[in-house]
Amino acid sequence: MGLGAGKASAGRASPTPPTRRGRAPPNSKMVAARLLRWFKPASALPSTALLLRFASKRHRPLPTSRPQTLRPLRSALVASLAAGLSGLGAACEVGALSRADALFDANEYAQLADLLRTALSSRPDDAQLLWRLARALKKLADAQSEKPAKEKLAREAHAAAERSLALAPECGAAHKWYAITLSELGAFLGTTDKIKNSFAVREHFDRAAELCPADATSRHLLGVWCFEVAKLSWFEQKAAAAIFASPPRATFEEALAHFELAEKTEPDFYPKNKLLMAQAHARLGQKEEARYWLQSCLRSTPKTPEDEQTLAEAARTKL
Image 1: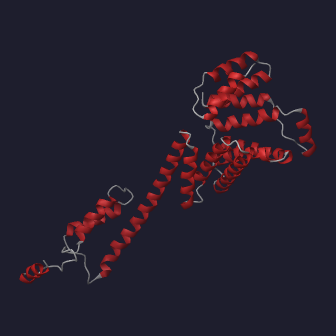
Image 2 (image 1 turned 180 degrees about the vertical axis):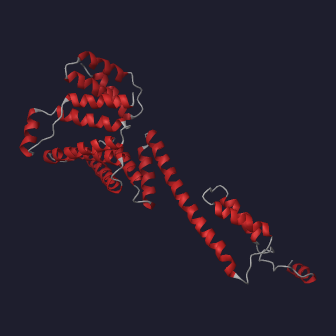
Image 3 (image 1 turned 120 degrees about the vertical axis):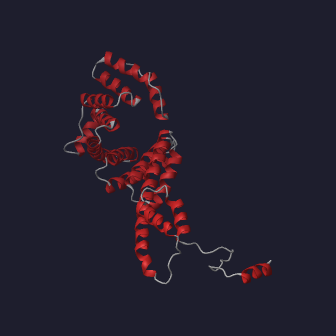
C-alpha cells in the first residue's frame, strides 16, 4: 500500500504537500466555512462572520510569507470571540437562574441546592445565585426534624443571604431572604438576641417591600412581623422593655393592613396570608370577616408542602 502511494505521487507533482492523512492543508475558504458552522447561531459575532465570509470568497490560501497581513483579521477575530464568550457567559447565567426557579416551583429543594452550589463554584460573587441558595436551604431546613441538622442549614442559608445582600444592597430579594433567614435563626438564639434581631428583620422587610412593591410576599412578611409582635404576651413585652429602651411594637390593625395589601397585590398567592387575615380579624373581634377569610383559605389549592400544612391548620381553626 505504501509503494502504491509512492508511485502515484512520483508520477505527478502535487500542488500542495499532503498531510499525514493524505489531505491538503485547509485554505482560508475551508477554515472560514468551518468557523461559520460553529459560530452561526451566535448573534454576538457579526464582525467575525463578515470577515470570514469575505475570506471565503477570495479562494486563496492563507498567506505565509507576510504574517503582518493577518494581524487585523486576527485582532478582529479575538475581539469578536471575546464578545461571544461574554455573551455565552450571560446566557449560561440566565439558564442557571431559569433552571433554579423551575426546580423551586417544583419543590425540588435538594436538587436545587446542588445546582446552585455547583454554579457558585465558578461564580462565587453572583448575588442572584446566593439569595436563591438561601431560599433553597431555608426550605430544606423547614423539612428537618432534628435540631442540629435544622440549625446547620439555617445558618448556611443566612450566610448565603448575607453575602448576597453585601454584593447587591439594592436587590429586594436579597433583603427579603436576609430577613427571613435571620428570623429563622431566632429558634437557636436566646431571648435578647432574638429581640435584637427583630429590629433588623423589620428593617429589611420594609426595604424589600420598598424595592419590590409588586412582590406580595414581602408585604405579607411585614404583616407576619407585625402579627407576631402584636401577640407577644405581657411577660414577653416586659422582658423586651427591660432590655431595650424602645422594644419592638406593632398592632393587629397594622398586620391586617399588610395582609390586605399583599392580597390586593396578588390575589390568591398564598393560603397562609388568608389564614393570618382570618386570625387578625378574629383578634380584632371581627368574626364575620374572620370566617370569610378562613373559608377562602380552605378553598385554596395547595402548591407546596407548606400550603398543605396551612390548610390542615385552617381545618383545625375554630373562630
